[in-house]
Amino acid sequence: MPAKVIVDECTGCESCVEACPTEAITMNDDDIALVDVDMCTDCEACVEECPTEAISMVE
View (cartoon, one colour):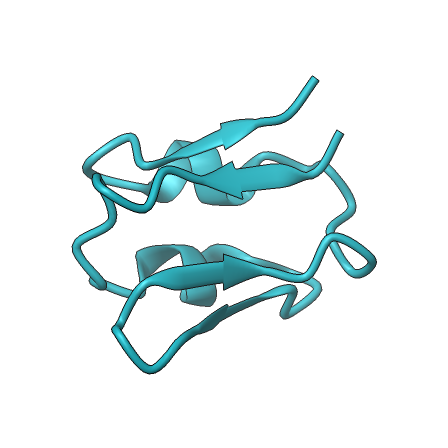
């Protein structure tokens, strides 16, 4: 189950980008995190790092 960004909660801090060991997270043009589901390994590092709890794991 890949990580999912809650767009309304993302502040664009990029903490998740730095935390992701597979570089599956990038920022879009609106400074919102974007997860590449094919690269996401479900490690939850981004979930733990996000200060606004804007990332969750999709079931």
